[in-house]
Length: 263
Figure 1 (tube, rainbow, N blue to C red):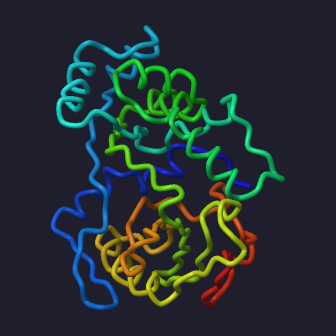
Figure 2: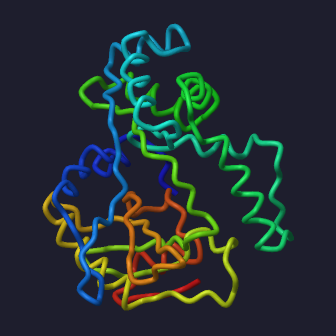
């Protein structure tokens, strides 16, 4: 399996594609138009800022001032770096999710567990960066290559677990070749995948990402339970063994010429 590297993710970071959504709307299969992406705010984590953090284990006053301005508009955010989020910190929590927990119990525990990722002040951000192996790896790797830009990424806190269903879609050669549930352990075996609705959405995404010459990637999206015709974009990731393919075997989904569907 290919090991993680900054280069692996670099063409898929939010700053590469967020501008594509500026004036972009998608349609439902009923020809209703809507904005499918959740807004991000990006603050550049410059090489000087990275070095300051590595040396002092905290953020500089300059970037702290920039971040604090965000809290004047919204009080709660989801935070990540350009490449990855600090979600590995969830594994350190006291709330253990067991394999034999009922899916409802798993979901309830997960919702409570996710609160550790919610940021409401600068100290929350520093805590996540300092305690997330993923974030520390990214910072150290970007520190080695100052030609690459790293960003602090903020999004309004909107936990959707229990209110929506997430899907992972696999695109190869600009063609949708796989759809599965994202983290299927949180859903019932009676779950369905609305293939026609997702295909309609992905066809529009294919045209969008062709603009930046991407034709092989994994796209995550979700559908609210009470609004099943609208699909919302989450993010894209590289299509390789490093990324979790959930219900698919990587070799199968990597080689298929047909559309595969699995829960």
